[in-house]
Length: 508
Image (cartoon, rainbow, N blue to C red; front, top):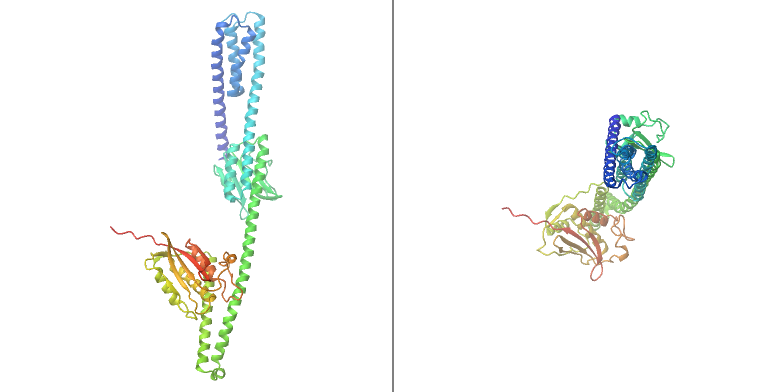
């Protein structure tokens, strides 16, 4: 495939050079014809030297457009036109006087070096433009590498820029994966398996631009080295890298190596930070669970031990026995809530939280939550739910958990027998705002941003610090929002929005 690629590129370059030569020669001959027609009426008044100077113009035109081969053709054409039309005897190729031979010889001898100089200048200008374009591309690439973009996006931009700058048939970037080099970005023709095997560096040796290549041409690999450590390989095929192109290509390779190394270091840092955060959460979770389990387990153990021991329970009156049974029941409910919250948080951290939306009435959802809410020292919440509320489209299980956690939080922080209100209002055509209001100590403005965090609780709070965090996570899963504000008359009002169900289409 590489032989075909090289042959194809050589054929393309040959055809391009042939077209330029033809174009330059045609332009030179056309210019020569125009100038000849313009000078013929005045050739008696023109000196031989003046005519020769005028005929320099077609040669320069041919060289500029078609290069040195077109310049040589222009010189030959100019020589013949000069002799045929402007050196006596006219309209013949004979040369009369010896000084005319000198004029023709000087024209031929001078114009060939002039064509060479003009062609060299033209080539130098083209190379300067190409080098300027390469430097501009390098600066643009450097600016991209400074930006904090994903590595895959950067590598795609890099290989595309290299292919355009060096007019290569194929450019690919390979990074080590599982003791092998794997293509992570490419532009142009795909890299074959034979090419990949050929590019594999020898053990203990890095490939480089100066490395010997078996075929002497393509493809070749450039090691990407950062801080003396190989991070990958850049391959280029279907083009010849000249001495002028070597320096910008190596600069490209160095920039790519730095980008790859920076992305890898950032990935390692993120992984290390994630590991540290997981360990911190694990320690916090163990501490929180240990604290929350110790008190109810101790109460359950003490109460059950008294009830199970005939000697101890014999002296208890029925009222005391009932109080111990109620204490056991209450502490078991508390443990059940804790376990439920822990299981919910496990689902969240495992990425298994996928809301299963269904259309329901808010009144029905509230009734279900209140029916399952443990009876405690508080009277049932006050309901302020308009009858004309629209249907909502939510995961009933998740939103019921949100409302339950907010009610338990309100019960825990509000005084005995103080009212707790569940209210709902139509916020806008697409959402309903639900609120749970208590008359406890409230939430200071400086803590409202952190109160929904994991394991955040007041000093002396008996909660696990998971309820509000889970409530926020479940609301966020519905792409809604939750917040806390001051309640009229003191206390806290926790509000969250729910999506209104789309209206049902009538059957025709």
